[in-house]
Amino acid sequence: MTKFLSLTAVAVLLTGGMGTLSGEQNEPSAAQKTRDNLKLLDKTEVNDQLNVVLGRGIRTLALIDDVTTWFTVNPENPQATSQSEKLRAFYRSYLEDMRLFMTMIRPFAEDEEAFRIAVKAQHPTALQISEAMDRSKTIRNRMQQLQAMGFDLAGANPGNEHYVLALTLAGAGKPLEAQTEMEKAVEVEPASACKYYFNLGAVDAGAHQDDAVTVAFQKAIAADPKCAEAYFQLGNSLMMKATFTSDGTVTPPPGTVEAFRKYLQVAPNGPNAEGARAMVQALSHR
Image (cartoon, rainbow, N blue to C red; front, side):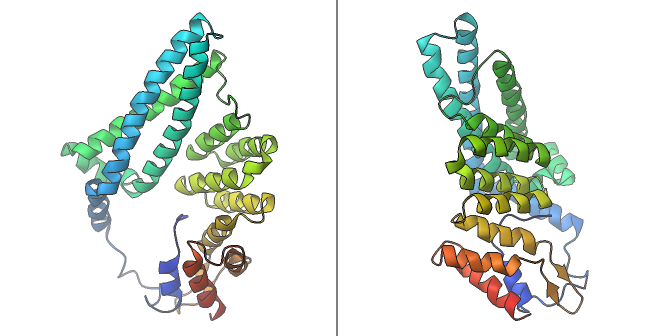
């Protein structure tokens, strides 16, 4: 399972700070994992992001209603054009906010027992999460209906429709279809390749599409060799495919160390420079 985060903790493990990986005795029980996942519901940052998602979702639906009404009567209506631009902006922001939120609560959302316990106990955050998920499905369905009527999701940004669709497909666990759409987006807007492929990699990670994550970051780098953070996350994605033996020996896939080194060349003072240096040092002395 791919983890889209800094590998400082892995670096500690590689340098012996956590011992070997052979024993099962240190693995938390299913019950303990469920308890830990339930604690996510009480985190301030989770509830803050949930409020953002709920609020933006309500506003997005209201704009969909407005545009649908105006578009049905007269798609050339200037007011409809103005509202359409607002809808495009809100929808893009909503998708990004929702992606971030689902990444934050992923352990809880994937734990059926934790979800069952929280809903049964009428935990307010769990109930709001269910509401947010239902609203997300409604918004996606309504946007598809609006597009079927002829609504142009791209607007003044010609590659945006492919970009949004690519992220939607990736989040739905369809990496090949997502990659095809993202390639179309990049073809229209090559200057956005770094951002587009990087965000695709992030969404693929959230959907546990390990191979697709690696491909997305490789494509970001191929399109823009100065896409610094893509090198770091490429190293992360490759490191998650490393093999570990009972004596602590680690064998990373080819290109792992090179990715971290390249990150340091492109962004020696970048936000992940410390983590990259730790990984290079750990992997170079294995």
